[in-house]
Image 1 (cartoon, rainbow, N blue to C red):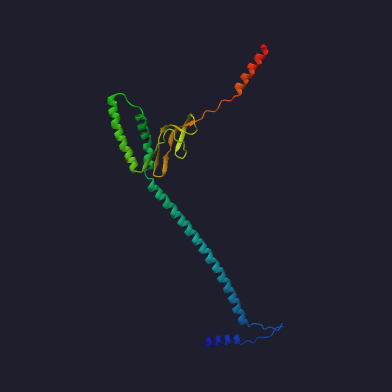
Image 2 (cartoon, one colour):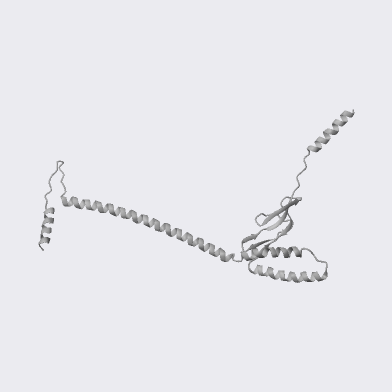
Length: 216
């Protein structure tokens, strides 16, 4: 109790300290007021510092959230693509067998017994094709005379033709799984033959003229 009374007296004494005039005619603040002003300045500086830290951590949070969201979207996209094209690896393994079937069917057998076997193999092949279609596999089979399109064709050879970039023959057809090209069609493309230079003809004409002059 005595200590509390003493503290109150001291506080009161500080508050009742007279304000003295300074040389400029102004008034000096009491020591208590100066103390409060310093404390307020320190608190304001501390608040400003904490606000900066809060803003910094807020930016880091938003950056981390954006990175996490982008990662989630990327993983979701990869997952969706994996589900959508899950059959691609299996289809790619079947392509050599399909190519072999097509090459075998391109030769018409003469023996009747062989023809019967081929007919049975064609029925089995059609079942394989139907299974591919059920998995949304489509066939890229350009026709002779079509314009060459590098987006779904691959030229393996060129031959002379009346026009450039025309399909002259289809070596093997291509395949798509839904909207993804698994393999382009392998085709042979036409190319206009280059015109022969006329230099040789000019030389021959010049030679003939010189021979005639010499004979004269």
